[in-house]
Amino acid sequence: MEDHDTGAGAPEVGVSTASPPPSGPASPSAGRQNGRPVQPWSGQAGDASRDQNGQHQNGQHQNGQNQKAKTRKRRKRRRGRKVFARDDAQFAAAGLSAPAVTSAPAGRPPEAIVAPLPSVSQARPEQAVRRPPVQELPVFAALDLGTNNCRLLVAIPTRHGQFRVIDAFSRIVRLGEGLTANGRLGQPAMDRAVEALKICGDKLRSRKIRKARLIATEACRTAANGAEFLDRVEREAGLKLEIIDRQTEARLAVSGCGSLVERDTQGVVLFDIGGGSSEIALIDLTGHRSPRLANHIVSWTSLPVGVVSLAERFGGRTVTREVFAAMVEDVAVRLHAFDGRDRLSHVLASPKFHLLGTSGTVTTLAGVHLDLERYDRRRVDGLWMDRDSVDRMVERLVGWDFQQRVANPCIGADRADLVLAGCAILEAIRAMWPSERLRVADRGLREGILSELMADDGVWRNSGRARA
Image (tube, rainbow, N blue to C red; front, side, top):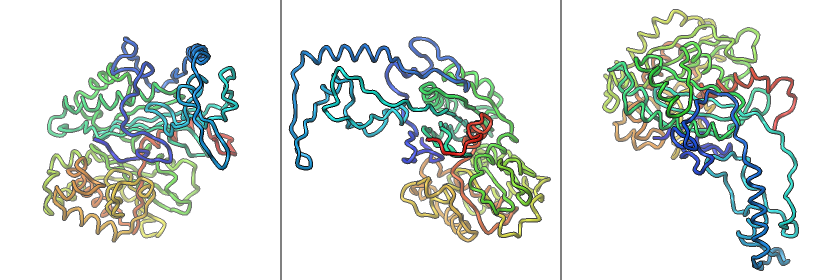
């Protein structure tokens, strides 16, 4: 089950979403590598260098074979002149790669794409192809194992406060399935999560990561066997995850959305509707603005309710209007118990106040609003929706039955039983903090982790020019 979220399926950054583990000896097998147990990976810099000596020896062997092989040439005409092109065997013998490669193989970084072939006169076996040295950019990674999703982002810093995603992975694993009723993580759910985490581990070990943070949230926080499950993840996937508290989760969500809050904004209620919990942060920007949006949080709360837990309690497949109203009321009662809910009362009436939602619920709603034939993050992330548009979309979804929700390309079978629970949480938030505008963010915890890792590492410090 795949998930549409930040970085997933964005062609401009060359990411892969749920690709299988890289094949070949450079990719560790599930739980073992070269016949040995996988060592736990907790975000420390790893060794992903290649065996250059082996490549050099292989090139010498190919050169020897090339002297015995007969040269075959194909004659082509291009722009009025004759050009001779060698076949694939000759490219290999010359120590070059065929120019037909247009995308990076699974598990390989985008920068490993084969460069354009030099002219034939330069492609002599005895000549080594020399390229100018390229400054190695630091690589950072963030992994978020939530109640519903397992997500990974790998990125390099660019301009100050920004980064470019070079790899991503996202899969719906429903780790928290049955947790509300049983208080424990179920075996099938844990199996799904471990399989997804093995892919993440392969991706991380294939690169030289400077810093990373691997987190687990509500499902592992509340499950009686949460710590036991993370021990299994360390043994089988080679990843050491940390369980973060709710305050940290709220702060990271805010940090990930800083670039979507415009300079003249006076106040924002940011909410992240998750699978097992919903984080809400009140942000006051009426004073001097700090580079870090999280520094302006004046109040926050974490509701112990998300799309998975709410749908399991009220039902997600068949949702009548009465059931939907009951879900909204359940969340509203929890919000009224939030002592800091009035900390932005002085800006609620201002046109420079708005809501900012980061979750599958609001991105799905935006996709339906745009009537997309296929979910497109580039059109959704940063989208503004006015009050009437949100009203219409929620009313539309509440009026659909389960099969109609499945049939919508922005919902699908993976979200059809959860989307109305998310809409109920959204409606309770909109009633508590009425706003004429809602901004949609297809980003969240992972982006917040990357922003904080890069800022703390100093990669943007005294940087007046963009990195390549």
